[in-house]
Image (cartoon, rainbow, N blue to C red):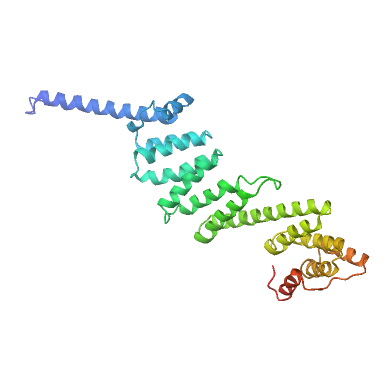
Length: 303
């Protein structure tokens, strides 16, 4: 092999190039090891140190930080993952991953049950990128932060109303998205949930002979939640309440609506039996609010 001198080169220059190549290789190797240790470190202290500012996050690329966020998600540590995704937004706001990391923050917080934080991240995404492909998903996540907190029927239903509002946005703003169908199903379930609340309160009043208060609740179900599964029972309970008050015309009209729309249900059979015991039949009588509902029923405008 020819020496540097025989090739007419400078041996000092060749040694310098060789040395620099070695340094570059070692630097790349060190960077790879550093990134790998950052991503796969299983110690909780490593995440805690990063969150307390003891790790210089600026030494890592957006891709490396994003991988660490994904790693924390794989460990079911949503809040920790959200921290790393937020660091991309903070350190590299104009990078390609900054936008993606914002919606991932919402997803990570939601997976950990940190609903206010998930809601804030999802809303920021919608505000900043309303026309982006992931905007529909961000809106869907925002709705889920309310929907997933809907408790049993006996609790306050403010969150249910919020869930309905946000689910409606998914359906109306992003009707062609893959989340629209799921949003519709959840909307129907949440809507039914609200009707359940009204029925529970109405039955409570009815058992205690507070017929006026009970009628108000059942009326809400009939007028505002008529597409839910609770409507047949609400009409039957109206028959019970009106009969107890001696308002036979209203009882007969409620039974007539029940018979026209839900004749095959047990609730109609029970109402029919109650009317017969009192020598009555199911037909529209009087001029109460139920008569308007009955006319809408005949015209096919109800339900």
